[in-house]
Image 1 (cartoon, rainbow, N blue to C red):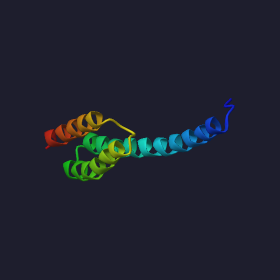
Image 2: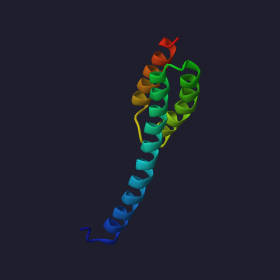
Image 3: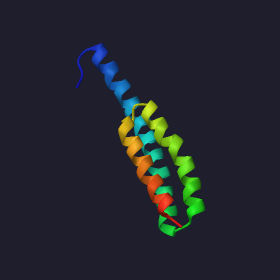
Image 4: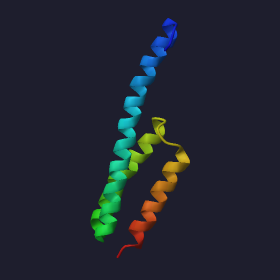
Length: 87
């Protein structure tokens, strides 16, 4: 366990940040899952709508430091390609 006051404070800060980051990561995964479910159902309109909702959420994860920029670009690119291939 942490000994100094500053180390104890860092433990508290890290716990708060971990909780926030976990929530953000979960939101991204939920949005990505919605797109994938729409793709699996074969509904192009629903997939495009879900992708439009998912894109800003994925990019927000980048600005908040939850995800790397290239990771988000790759996810968006692959989802977009799969949605485009429908229909």
